[in-house]
Length: 283
Image (cartoon, rainbow, N blue to C red; front, side, top):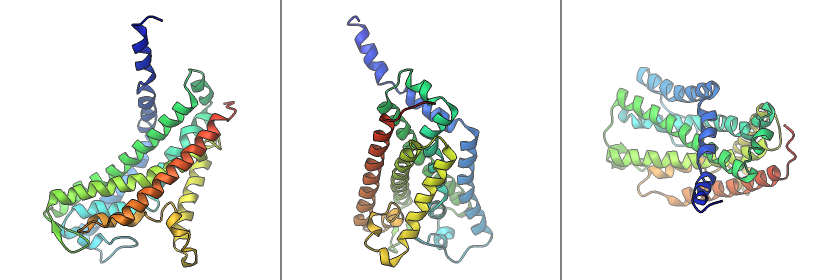
């Protein structure tokens, strides 16, 4: 190899082609577009329902429904609150379960590994795609909710949960912070899904398993006798994003939630790597 060829080989090694190909598989499939449409439908229904007949209250987590009529930005926050327990995790679970299991089910996994593509690199690219999808799905819900909310109810200063008002720009920045925090939790769930995907060749079964893990975490978090376990559950700190909507911001829960999410991501990505790099791929 000549000196001229060496940089080209290095550049090719760090090319984003594999990631772009993975993102195309995710965002180019009609079924995934249908899933994203369902996610976008929730803030639409909330905005229309509140416009027709303003509700009096909401479920678990911060109650943003009562504030929607005073500022349309709260439609996004209400939609995120409604979708966080099931819809957003289900969307991420479907994508995560399909990463390895879907390739094995279609018989393309073995072909990809003979291109050649290193298993570690493939796993890293697939997890990066899961994280990008989690961010995109969260931002989609927030963008649709904020757009419709502002169109139907207007904007202006945002009243925080602590009762103080901040300028609209500050409120929008806090909404982006909420999206980033929620995406971190979903990325951790995606790491669990990546590991599950290395254990099976049936993406539907993997999706069900991931959703069961998510629901079980929520259920265990409601049992007082298991209080010692609650801080270590994946979903325990998910609703702490409400602390970003206080003045001053209460960072303790946010930091703890980010650390738990990072720990889950590290543990299950490591487990997925250990499983996938020693797995006998036959399909």
